[in-house]
Each structure stands twice: as structure tokens, then as C-alpha cells.
Image 1 (cartoon, protein in one colour):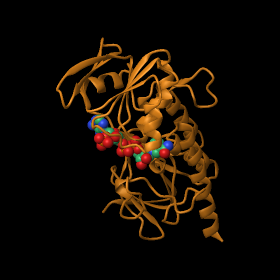
Image 2 (tube, rainbow, N blue to C red):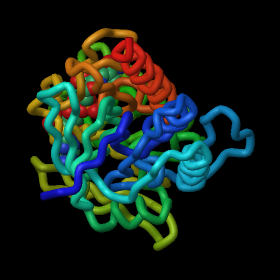
Image 3 (cartoon, rainbow, N blue to C red):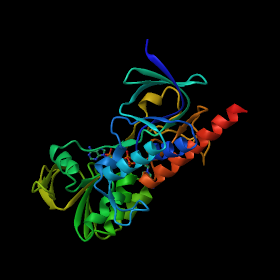
Image 4 (tube, rainbow, N blue to C red):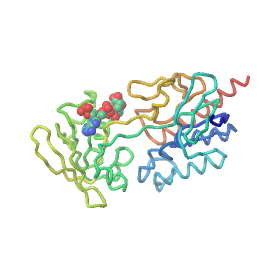
Length: 316
Ligand code: NDP
């Protein structure tokens, strides 16, 4: 039988949402336990420079910022654990969670801050320049600024791709959008916006063959037209991927209400409450609109405050 541990507050996931929830919960003497998850520090650890998080006038690297958040959470005695939750049972008043270290945790409150993962094409060259910070990104709002005055390519045809292409068009001299079919998936208004932007060129029926580079950074994209078979090279220094995100919510689906794309639904707008009393959500696991570190941190704070109020209401 696995070891049972009783906790007041279990935080699942360690991005800005999870750490902010931990800081607040720890200062409220809820002795939070955090399981960091598969990617300690979350998506920001794959970002190079963060320049839009208030309080860092000189910018900060994603990994450094996450180390600082972790240190701040530990300063107030958050029990931060390297590991992940594999299974949950939210059917009773006590929320049961099983961790990969063999522990069975019985939590009075749970904050889900498991985030979402950007989807990538899976090309070796794409992954190379993603990992070395050499020009591949899945977040134009985070990284677009580094490509101002330069040419970029963006893959995708949904609302995100349109929004990001439009964002890039204001910074870059030219944006080339690669649409794999002959139609956009995006809403008409979003698609029309990119179609009507002068420095956005849309290539339909076009797939990425390879992200080209000099070993240090991206220099172009080799593309292929799926109708004619013709291959062309597009010069660019930034290669953006906007083909969707996958929220990391699979283990909760039997208990927590998810929308059709897997994002957690708030039970009460303006709060962090899920449909299960005592279980709260923060960050990208419930956010397909903003997806920013600062918004994740804000909802992490909300989740900890909601958890604290939930515990207080049960005590009376
Ligand atoms: P979507 O799933 O809506 O779109 C993904 C896009 O990526 C599709 O055009 C798809 O092509 C393309 N794609 C997928 N895989 C590949 C691949 N391997 N190669 C090339 N292209 C690929 O994701 P979004 O992130 O755009 O949107 C998610 C949700 O969030 C949607 O509901 C959207 O409406 C919403 N959203 C709303 C916004 C707003 O209203 N402001 C802003 C951003 C998102 P294909 O069409 O061929 O399948």
C-alpha cells in the first residue's frame, strides 16, 4: 500500500501560476506542497529573454525567472517536489492524488496549474533552433520583439496564427504565413485582418520542409507547395509556430469539466473555482486567450486566495 500524506493545499505544476499560488498559500500558512510536473518551471523555461514581466526593467531569462519564483516560494516554506501527479480521484470531499514517487496525497484543497504545451511541427531543425534560442518560437507576443525590422515566417491558420501574424506585422518588415490547406481555420474577421495587412504574405497549400540556419540561428525556411510540389526558400530570421496548444489536463478529465479542446472550465466566472469544491485552477490550463506569464501569475494568486477562503468556510 502506498504511503498516505495529508495536506491542506496541493499545487500541481510549477509555472508562474503554480509558484504564485504557492507564495500566497504559504504566506497564509496553508503549508502548500507542490509537485513541479514534467517540465519544472513550465513553458517559460523554453523562452530565452522575458522582457514583458513587470519588475524586470533589464529583462530576465525564462529559466532565471523561474528559479527566482521557486526561491520565493521556498522562502515561505513551500514543499517543492521534483515529480508529477499521475492520477487523481476528486469524487469525495478529500481530494486524492497519486504521485510518481509512490505517495498517495489527501488534499483539502488542490490548485491545478499544469499549464499547456505549445504544439510544434516536430522537425529536427525546428527543435534545434528552439532549444538553442536561435529563432524558433511558439509565442509572438513573448519573442516577436527580437525580430523587429526583420523578416519572419509563421505556421498556422487558426485564430492564434492570425493574431500572432498581425502582431508580428507591426514589428517586422515582412511576415510570411504558411497555411497548409487552401482555407483558414480562423474566424473570418481574424483571417480578413491578415489578408488586408500589406506586409503579410499568405502562402496556401504550403508545408514546411525544413527550418534553415547556420547552426547558431535561423536564416530561412524551405517550403513545399502540396499541389505543385515546388520547393522554395523563404529568407527569415524568426520562425514562429502557431498550430495550437494542448492543455495538460488529461488526468483530470473524469472529474473536472473541460471544454471541447481540453481547457478547464471555470465554474464561476471571475473566480478560480472548478466544478469540484476545493479544486481551483490557475494559468494556461484554463486560459486559451491570454497565455501570458503575468496573467498566469495573477490567476495563481486568485486560486490561493480562493483555496484559503474555502478552508476558512469549512472551519466554521
Ligand atoms: P486551432 O486548433 O484553432 O488552429 C490550429 C491551426 O494550425 C489550424 O489552422 C491548423 O491547420 C494548423 N495546423 C495544425 N497542425 C499543423 C501542422 N502540422 N502544420 C501546419 N499547420 C498546422 O488553434 P489556435 O491556437 O489558433 O486556437 C485555439 C482556440 O483558441 C480556438 O478555439 C480559437 O478560436 C481560440 N483563440 C481565440 C482567439 C481570439 O478570439 N482572439 C485568439 C487565439 C485563439 P488546419 O486548419 O489545416 O487544420
